[in-house]
Length: 214
Ligand code: TMP
Image (cartoon, rainbow, N blue to C red; front, side):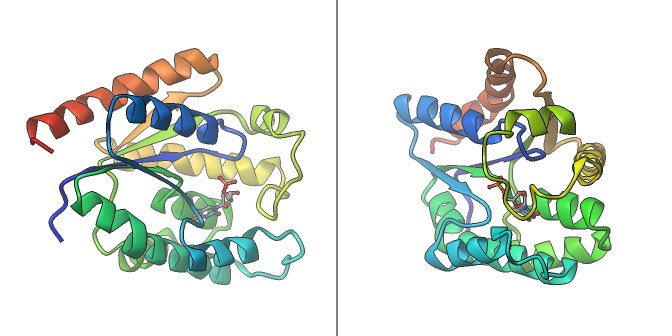
């Protein structure tokens, strides 16, 4: 597959404000005339949405960490094949609310699975489709908990602050391992400022896309 589009993923612990920022960026790019596809993980295809239900259902408290990792990877493989790769081939901009770094942060740093194994699993799942840019919205787990306090917590959100702290540390470690691809934005700032920093990170990639004549 020859990739022509632009692939941006957003990451962060639960309550980091990703979904709001993804919506806002998506709307702004659509208004500017970009051919845009937004996806959220796990999910985005009929099969992947079924896997999402399994994974997030708070009653499924018996799911072991390895099963969890395989299910997230399975949902990702389906999404890449059905939605992300075709969109990129057509030259579209794809924005993902979570992608492969979530598995490294949650199942690796959070659950304690071997990150080398998870890297291999991810490689199998995405078959070479890695984001051009990944933006981590970084907040403290306490602030994340406050921000999502009104919602009904899913299976992962029921994990305590210590789990979210490990996931956050995992994200920061990933940003140091892949500094070219992964950028961190301080999401403790007011949303307007967070959005301005996101736009500043995304703009050069849009310019490259325009130069490439896509
Ligand atoms: P969401 O709340 O952002 O929709 O994400 C669903 C939950 O799934 C969230 O708690 C993070 C978790 N998750 C993983 O543990 N591993 C993964 O690979 C992905 C994509 C999400």
